[in-house]
Image (spheres, rainbow, N blue to C red):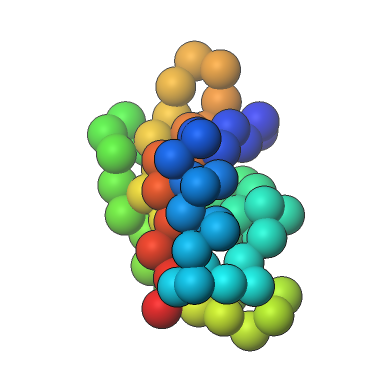
Length: 73
């Protein structure tokens, strides 16, 4: 499944709260969610390779899985 990261989510990666979370971590997390996501939904409890915990908000669109934002813990 193709994972698309929005500009908003990319911008959030530069914030201190999302420090050490990489786009690769996001692709792995979003790609690992089973099933179809028809509405924007928050998924909790992912871990970046750095050990940082984060949540993502994602939705499936015809082009793939859209990651709307990232919330670092």
